[in-house]
Length: 338
Image (cartoon, rainbow, N blue to C red):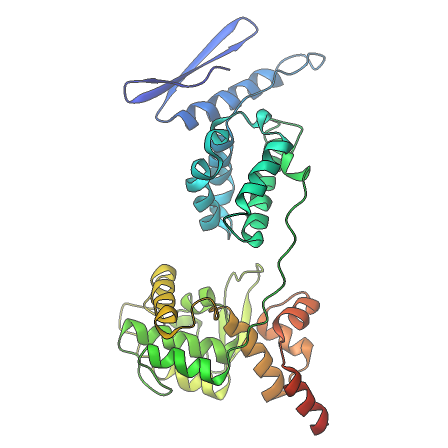
């Protein structure tokens, strides 16, 4: 299979198989490669089984592009996959355009070691997991290769789970930076960020879950979440404080969003405020989930099986070991109270 060749505003590719020649013209080089791979698969599937199949060459970038369009865009991680597709050439250089058969384990190892010098191990682990899934897709669904180079090398050591709490002084600092306080009706974009922050502390809901709340999801005693991170629906019971907070927001006619922010605009305002108040690098929004879960145990004495219903955790050990983060002093007080 030859590489695509540009012809004016289009790309053309030639596939030769058993003395026959097949051509196609597409808008991009990636589309040409994907057409050629499918064509060769079609031709090989009709050939006698005793014949050894010819290797079908498709670039790493084209494979990821095809994976995103045929599988990834329907997944919860679609935004992450698209992000990796857009940055693949800058991260991998010439290897992004090489045949998947030339992407050997040693080249993957070299990329891994170089990547670890610029990003955290958690990022590399997530990227390697995606790329491994892409090669499994090429192996099991497209029959393009028998190998998965990402399974031949070790992933970086998993970083320790965060146990950052949001204490009262941190909460007050964040709210002051956003010009907000308990009981204030949100009127400005930054106020809605502060409201979402407080609501997360009251409910243990994730940022995406809060941004996804619509008027029809709110009931008297709970909020119904659809299609959550773990793939199931979940009802989040409301504390008295959470119910009070919902009365502060007057959702305009025609706009059913509880918080008028996209995920990106929410992130930008949140991060700018952290830098302004000196908490950048210390506090993450997801830390509200740790804090809320710990408060649920201390303030409401909830047993772990009930707590899991609220938070949506299917694995109790993750809930207990990762998200419940009491300090030694708090545990000591609990012992004295008992």
